[in-house]
Image (cartoon, rainbow, N blue to C red):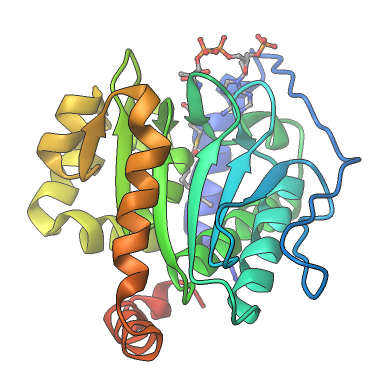
Length: 271
Ligand SMILES: CCCCC/C=C/C(=O)SCCNC(=O)CCNC(=O)[C@H](O)C(C)(C)COP(=O)(O)OP(=O)(O)OC[C@H]1O[C@@H](n2cnc3c(N)ncnc32)[C@H](O)[C@@H]1OP(=O)(O)O
């Protein structure tokens, strides 16, 4: 489990918990299902239905992961752990080449951290919860698989971070927002999230995006580079599949090693 920066956790607790005390958020939590895919020789499962797994091609090369934490895909600890397990299992499965990350919910990709997980919790419990999110993000960011985020709705704060961990981001047109609003909700941005954002957007734009806390429309998100493409909602998955197919055409070994080399300089923020 990765360590969470103590200053960040403590500022978060001071800044945000009083506001949370005023809200009573509820969240759905389904933990019964198991999702199998592929032929008899292999299977991957999150051990829960918080993430649904779909195989997408006869060669078992592409997997679609659908976040499924009603009502807004807030990242519960259970969800973070399920995602981490799934991505690690896929990484270990040589047949798997790429994954598309999307959501089962019609208008929300992810609302980020589960704010209710922080209310009334001890400092150590909050640190532990943060580390489940960071471990999940780190696992996705460093996955050997080609990764595409198919953003089918709002991607806020941690939801935007999950998308930034992917190599390519496609967003559906619509009345959705995409952004890093941490400073608005009172969270000093953790260094590792800033580093991932700089990696995706470049320093100057990342600074503007992070310090403004602005929530962008899909078109605005495209302009600042939070997403690479905006498409009609009905085309989202097919476009994502086409992109992923192109990404995995490249020889697996050179691609894998190059991705590792490109991203490894950021690992210091994640260990
Ligand atoms: C380890 C450090 C990482 C640091 C970086 C990450 C930080 C974070 O992620 S902080 C989280 C910041 N997230 C947000 O500010 C998003 C807040 N939510 C929204 O803006 C909206 O809910 C929405 C745009 C995502 C969806 O809007 P809408 O479809 O209108 O749904 P509602 O607002 O009515 O929400 C439905 C339901 O869900 C509850 N809820 C919303 N967000 C969260 C959340 N993040 N955690 C837990 N619960 C959440 C909301 O309260 C509603 O509950 P009920 O009133 O009980 O129906």
